[in-house]
Image (cartoon, rainbow, N blue to C red; front, side, top):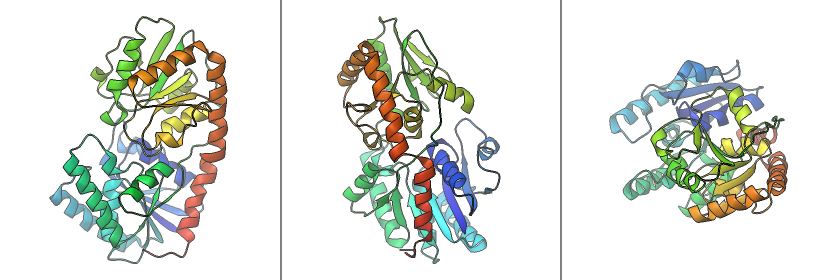
Length: 354
């Protein structure tokens, strides 16, 4: 089976998702058509993360925001890709690919699946008018072609609220052993780019509350606008190689996510694999990963987060128990070797383009 993967940003968790998908379905032919928007790595470096059997095509005019001329050119390029490559299945990843890919799909009879990995209308870094426009565009594209399969239950429910019926398959990561590294301090970490979506201002505010507690350490693994993390007790590692990131997970006692919206974050799934207790903001994507007082806690504001972290610092045995529960939950519900194969069932199903 020839599977065409279409994605605009060649970075972030969406790429992690496609990598897992192609690794778990090696018996099929995979072609990734991608834009050139990257974060830290070059396009060539991102490609090296994929299995050797994956093929690539560049989608030159794909851009994140709405840009009529660029979008028209990108659509023309897609029509040519569809006609030339003749796939059995087209899997769309990210909102721009999801929209243009379904518009192009209207002119063909290919089977099309769209996985948003972060609903665009949940973004808070854009105006209310733009969010309403994204809702309109999602509804319009859904009429043309394809089926939406979300990456979490809460993302699926967000689509249901705007009148679109969707399915969902949980994201997953490979289950493996992460070596625990002893640190003298209680370490609270986040692994992400420093962007508005991750709400670094709130992370900074929480960290600043512990400024006089020299037994608590805050760790941000990633890079971006460092000025948003000004509290002196926050260590920012910058961009690290995958092996170094794995080592950092081994240092963390509590994973603190302050995100405003998510799809189903791979960084938190990796934390669960490393047996880390979770303290996550109550938003789409995060709420699928925590059972309160079983593997961690959800919070709605800064004071709640501070109270939870104070309690956990005083109860290290509870932190360890919650972390072990995280690993168990991951194995049962967010295992890549199981979940990614569920997409194959959808690829092979007899349901048509719509």
